Amino acid sequence: MENAVEIRGLCKSFGTFEMSDLDLDIPRGYIVGLIGENGAGKTTLIKCITGANIIDSGNIRLFGSEDRNASKGNIGVVFDECHLFQQMTGTQIGKLMSTLFDRWDESGYEALMSSFEIPMEKKLRDYSRGMRMKIQVAVALSHCPDLLILDEATAGMDPAARDEFLDLIMEYMQDENHTVLMSSHITGDLEKIADYVVFIHKGRIVMNGPKDEILEKYGIAKGSEENILALGHENILSIRREGLFTSALVDDREGVAEAFPELVVDPASLEDIMVMVIRGDTA
Image 1 (cartoon, rainbow, N blue to C red):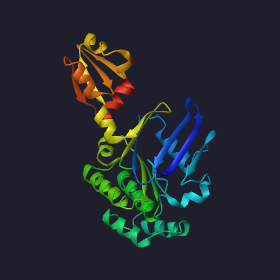
Image 2: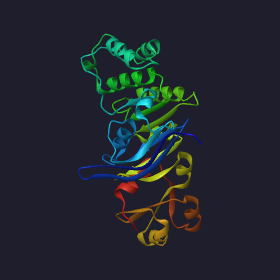
Image 3: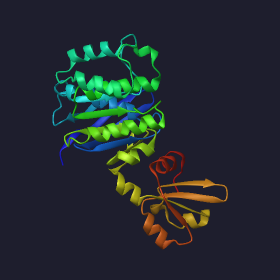
Image 4: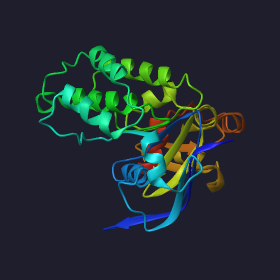
């Protein structure tokens, strides 16, 4: 499988945070969802990929090349905060971007701004956070990138706007050469559209695989602490004790349900998995 991004041995640290020896492939032609708690390293990883952060060691290849300058025009990025100049209007932003990107599509940009109901003559500073995110999305898509990186791009959007945005991403993915890396705290959005999921926790990847396989495999077993511990340490990924009941994250939902009929074993959503790993304990 051809990869849009290949990361090997990535190390990046600052303050008390450390990302060490991280390996990751982002396959071309797929949507990869990136999940994790605040401070887990999602934005750090994204900034390393885009070149906004200088890595301490390791290497990152984009479309088979380590030359970041050769690839930067082929990447569209939406950060969790809008870094465009706040005094500029939509028209001025379009003119500026046309000088920066060889494949800038002005008519496509204007069509996206119109579909987002964003007046071209209004200054960026006068918009809500959600609307500024939409402008970033319009800019990112309008220079026709093959890799779209979205860092909490739906933050501040209402449910209807998020649904519209997800439809736009699916339309973008009609081109099989396009790839999306999307981080989001709204895991339900990723469950709708992601092909793969990467879970980063404390600077390390703790889960990485096809989304459907993850949702099929993982489960939350519930019962008395005695019955949960009977699963054995090797079968419990994380455990939470809550009053009279104890819950455990398991990675063989059907097998556990069959072998331990006294337990209730429910499917685990991406949010369930995150909460159990972040707030749970080892058995």
